[in-house]
Image (cartoon, rainbow, N blue to C red):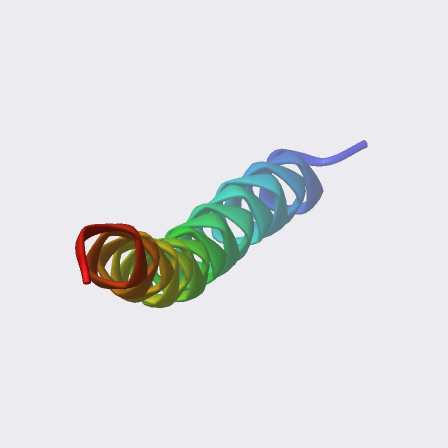
Length: 55
């Protein structure tokens, strides 16, 4: 392999790692949003159950 081919191989590897990191960040943000939505729903259900038990 020539030096140029090795450089292109390493560049492709580094670019692939960057893309994978970006995808992980995007999916982590989406997971966080989904978790916060589930938490709000659970808190609302708990609040409603407490109100029913106290009423």
